Length: 278
Ligand code: GLU
Image (cartoon, rainbow, N blue to C red; front, side, top):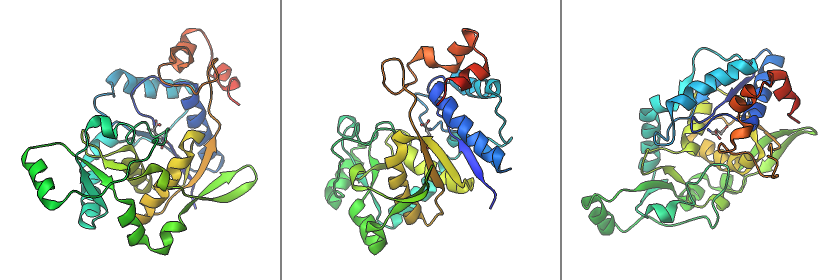
């Protein structure tokens, strides 16, 4: 089997040391196995994505010495695919419309790195109420129904897991999908979500190994559920420790000093950056 890895940043800020870490691990893993390394631009959030961040991804990764395959998948160009797959889930009764306001659902659709606190679960509205909401033009999101997913998968639901490679070998990690509640798969604004698009794209691009920060370990459990429901083959995962700033907190895009751009401006070389990584 040829190893296929990927780096999938969102152009919502400049890449920082944590991104460099993920990108380099994926790149090195593919290169060591004479596999393929792909770049994917996760730009579904058209409000937060900016062209200058998009361009900077290519410049900063090149500066680091990475090379990726020519074909760069852009999620904004695949909206019709996400819509079609979401429509399949609708036909199968696995998702339902949720008219809750932004404030209600804020937690549920927060950054993929933080599992929502107090996971939200609900049921579809009664047909008449739903019709009224639709007639009023109220916006809605599509939520995955965990109870319908459990019915669809039968025994497979409680056995959901993902394969994780650690230093000690390969482990089967049980998926804790309940912690996500009825997660939003089709957002009100974009019609899709990180979880749905990422799973569909990793399958489409035949990605075999996904390495990302350990803040996304729990998300791999949710993704295991989506792979099972969509009848797709999941990748193997590796999770790396998070790079923290001077305050001990995980780096975020707002930490300007840790961006590759700022480091470059301070005169650091790619080797200096690599030396800062664990
Ligand atoms: N676009 C996501 C991010 O930047 C990708 C996460 C992933 O690798 O699946 O965090």
